[in-house]
Length: 65
Image (cartoon, rainbow, N blue to C red; front, side, top):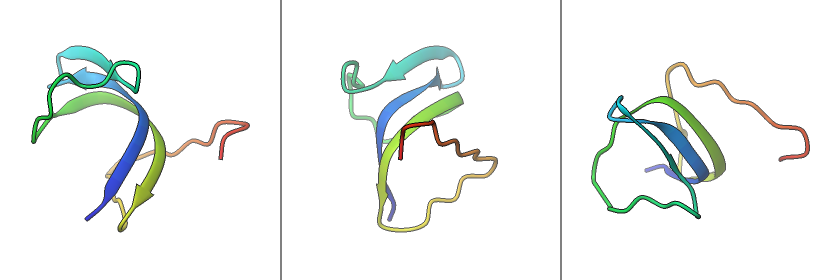
């Protein structure tokens, strides 16, 4: 099991609806499944395993660790 904590998740929900989730704008519902396209995630932490995402590109911003 992998648990991923994110600071921000931005993308097109179900491939259609542009949306941003963050601590200031959390998801209104806890749903068991959601599909995103054009995703950008600012990841705070990951625990419990190895996360493998085909096509994933990692970027480290200056000043962030």
